[in-house]
Each structure stands twice: as structure tokens, then as C-alpha cells.
Image (cartoon, rainbow over all chains, first blue to last red):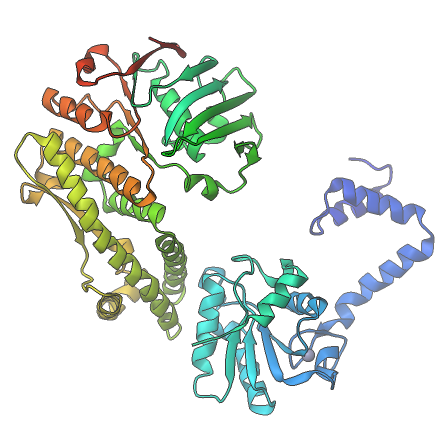
Length: 200
Length: 365
Ligand SMILES: [Zn+2]
């Protein structure tokens, strides 16, 4: 499709590469930016430029931060006795939105899956063990996706944690099988937290 | 479950039709290529969303049509009627409805109606590679036991993961965790297969005897190097087996023991039927297996499956044909297709409805 301007055409094509954006949506966004007050697109351009430079990952938990500890790790009001292990930072967002949890997080970076070339050493396990040495964690909650890989990863972690004076729990089932926390609604997450069960 | 009626439009080569079925025997005749199997396929597709010829939805649309539409009523054991509908536009997504509600997950449909299909190719159950027999066992058990289905899905995924690890690294320290999980689910599968095979085997032996005429016995066995009568014992045995195979596994880069390597032995007259049986014996054994499956499903699900026999008479002798007809006729609603009208002696059945198929046109008699 020719938009009469090579730049506009390239912008639309670029936008269609974003998740969930088809050609029609891309066109709407591009034309909106063209007609809206110029500050709007300048601000967006500035943010996009800085995004990859400024936003990184928290050295302690792996959540998003703009340098130093993330807001959750730095928050003194969080419950230090609870540590929740999730696969990706996006799941921290889901859990925070649900309001079901006031402890701290640890982002594992995935689950064990040789089919995808992910092995235990690719996950943030060593940093997790170090945190357990240093922080007064009483309960470790595994919030990994249901399914073979999530369960195997939970089993692997349980083995690595054997012998520690630590309560090891996982979220109650009822989350969609194979689906991540990202797509669970708030009430479901609340129930999953309340009904969490002890790992053997 | 049994079919009351079927309406078909634009399905394969079938002319648009509305058919009412006999509660017991429906006999479909017509020369090859006229549409007999297409009618059987429509009957299966409507209640299961699958084709026994493994056709894609697209292929089911008649060549000069833009969509197909199937609708049929079935009655369950209690006489309760269910209305099934399936439709697909050329190049579109198929939609299935049950009593007016869209069925989004095929699994919801699959659990509802038992169907047993026997076609000319099914003698492969006896003669071909072990994976045919494993699939037969898995299908039978998964249909009747949700726990088995869960274990099976988990096992298959774990197996793929474990093989991927063997491929990538030939094993290593992280293999152990996958081995543990493989054993956990694998042991349950082996045990369930072994226990249920006794029941299935008795049924199959009964059908074979009733149909046989050769005085020989059919015996099904579970063939596996993994032993044990309890979950713990099977797990221990599978564990030991995997341990002894560790070197070969890292060399061949695949999992060499577990339910995915086991087989179902089919012995006829005390000898391996796969190798030593006659063509007629093999075919009888395959039919007996399928009927045993029907009986097994019926018993567990408390609902009789629909039996579809697609051209199975050609390689059975007169006596076996007669006996097969007597066996299925009264027990299940049966749809049987034969190329020649003389393939079947209708005196064998008390009552039946016959349909002639010619160039896609189906004429009830
Ligand atoms: Zn942090």
C-alpha cells in the first residue's frame, strides 16, 4: 500500500511488526500521530529513544528498573519473609495489579526446556540461592506456569533448596494450563495465592 | 449412542440428502468410488470432528461447492436426543454445534460419543509396526480414563524434552530430573496398560472365538521389559532399565525405555500372530480387537459406541462374515459398507435398512 509518503509507508510497516497490530490498526495509529498536536509524537519519539537506554533489570530480583534496585526491592514496606518466584517480569506486573501479594519477587527468566535450548544454568537460580542466604525469607512461593516445563522447574528448584529451613509453596491450580500468569484475571490470582499449597 | 438421522450438503461427492437410519443395522452398498466411504466419513466427522481418512476440513467440501453442512440427531442410551451440526466454508474455519451451542474445543466433543471405525487398512493393527498398537491402547484408555489422558500428554511432552536434552548434550547432570519425571508418568501408563489389557484381552478373545472357526485362541499380552504389578515396582523397574541403558542413550541420543517403546503382543494359537497367522486370522484378530475396544468403551462409559465397518468383508471367508454380522448386528448401531450386494446375506439380520449409493446419490431402499 502506498501512503503518498515513503516515510508514512515505512512507519505503518514498522508498526505492523508490533504485537497485536495489524495493517489497519497501524494505519490508524500513524495517521493519528500525523494529525494530533506535534508534541504528542515528539514525546513518544523521545520515550522510544530512551527506552532501551534507560530501562534495565533489577540486579537483585530481575524486575524492570532505571538503575539500581527496582521500586519493589527498594520498598521497605514489603514483606521480607515472602519471596515469589516468577518466570518473566511481565508476571510481576500481573501480580502487582491483582494486589494479592505484598512480598518480594524473583524473576527466574524462564523455565527449563531443552526443546527451546533453556537449561537450568540459563535461569537466575544462583542469584536466587544467594538471596536466600542473605534475606530473611521464610516462604518461597513458586508461581510458575502449569505444565510439564513449569512443574519440572519447580522440582529442580525444590531439589536445589533441599535442606533449607524454608517453607516451599506453589500457587493453587486453576490457572489456565500452559498459560502464564500474564493472562489470568485478578480474582483468579487472588484465589491462587490464598489457596497456595506446600510442595512435598 | 445411535444415529436417528443425518442431513448432508456439499460434503465430498455426496448429493444433498436427508437420511433416516435404522436403530441397529444400516447397510450401505455401491461400487467403489460411488461415495460409500464418504457417507461413513460424514457420520464419523459429525460426532467427533475427525475423519478416519485424516482428511483436512478443506478436502471435505465438495469440489464444485463453497461449503459443507452436516446435521444429525443422535439418541443416547436413555433416549435423550442430541443435535449435532458441523459446517465449514471453503478456506474457512469449521464450526461445530451441539444442541445449538458452539463447541470450541474438540475434546468436549470427543468425550461425548464413542465410535469404532474399522476399515480395510485396520488389519495393520495386527501386521504393522508397534506404534499402531500403542496408539490403539492409548486411544482406548484415554477415552475412558481422564487420568490416563493427563499422564499420556505429560509423558509425551517429557519424552520430547528428554530427547532434546539427549540430542543437545547426550545427557549430562540435568538429565536426571527429566528421567525422574519420565518414570513418574511412564510407570502409571505401563501399569494402566497392563491392567486394562487383561480386560481388553478377554473381550478380544471372546470375539475372536465367536468369529474364528479355526479353533485357535487369541491372546493379548503387554510386551515390555519393564516389570511390576504396582506403581512403585514398575517405576523401580523402569528406573533400573533406564540406568542400564544410559550409555546407549547418550550414544543414540534418544530415550530407549518406557511405554513409548512397548508393544502389544497378539498371539494366535500360541504363536506370534503378526508373523505366523493367515490373512484371514489377522483380519479376524483386528476385527476382534476393534470390537473389544467397542465393548470396553461401552462398559466404562455406559454408552454403546456406534460401529462403522468400511468394506471389511472382502477378506473374510463366508463363515467369519456371517459370524461377524451376528456379533455386531444386535449389540450396536452398525453402519456397514460393502461393494457388492451379495457380500452380505441379509437373512443374518432380523431387520435392517439398506442404502444404495451411486455417483454420490444415496437411495434408501
Ligand atoms: Zn528488584
